[in-house]
Length: 99
Image (cartoon, rainbow, N blue to C red; front, side, top):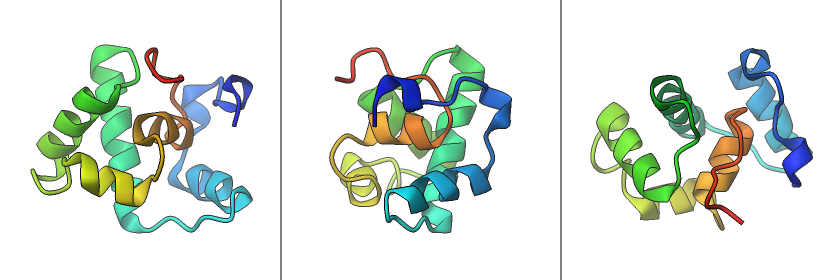
């Protein structure tokens, strides 16, 4: 996944788009994945930038509850670099502090 693979038109995103992108990586998204992506999109709508890990955890906790806002939960859903992968699958720009 390179920077050019992030969606350039934010309104083009849908849960179906996210599932299609995941399928290209041999992943299957559940409702849990989609609700986290939607929480990240709400964060972006409110603040105008993609959340890095700490703000992402807080945003998910605010929208979905404290248990789902823990970094371990996000790592289970999006192994490796959750903030980066969540931004990608949510159709958001890459978070600034993600490599």
